[in-house]
Length: 235
Image 1 (cartoon, helix red, strand yellow):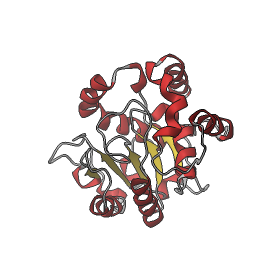
Image 2 (tube, helix red, strand yellow):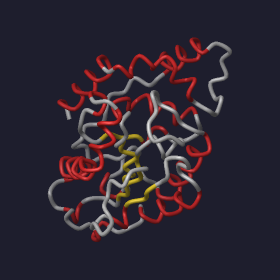
Image 3 (cartoon, one colour):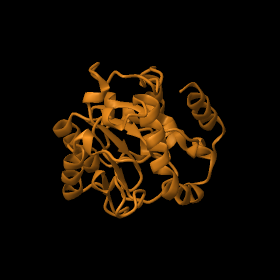
Image 4 (tube, helix red, strand yellow):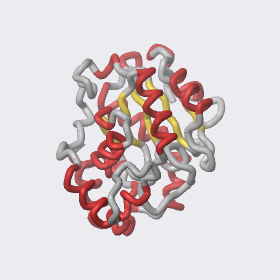
């Protein structure tokens, strides 16, 4: 939504974490960028990043142009999922985790909606995924909120209670109140953001922050993304 776009723009310019942006390329453990100078590597990433705006939350088109209600959505966290840390001072993606994510996306055909602390950097994350061999164009949006306007510890405490509400808000705004018309979806996070016994428990895959997305968790995620929309119950 327009309001969420403004809040993310403000987060990018005011957050203390944005001072680490020139070092983002250093955090890519794959060595994809291959520059001898960290500064040159970071500069090249910024200058070649795609200049597309965020997809409107109410859009009913998927990344491939299909009816979005027919395409599963993966609500994706990053820290502790695509890397092996609970919190990080900068965006950090590990190649083996990205490769497993790519496999999940290929199996399920899912689009990605970011729930991560870093979700205001939607275009950048999509670009980095692409550079690491994953379909970065599948990043179609982010859940609402202003994660970069709070410190990481406060954010970690907050997501345990807010993540479900943020996802519900995204799905309702994009697809309407009728849950039977929501697409298939799954949630992956290193925190217990969906309580045991919750109606969404089968759609939630928890990773361990010191391990990230391993083969077993990737398989569970592909299975969760195949649950039928009719199985969605009120949270």
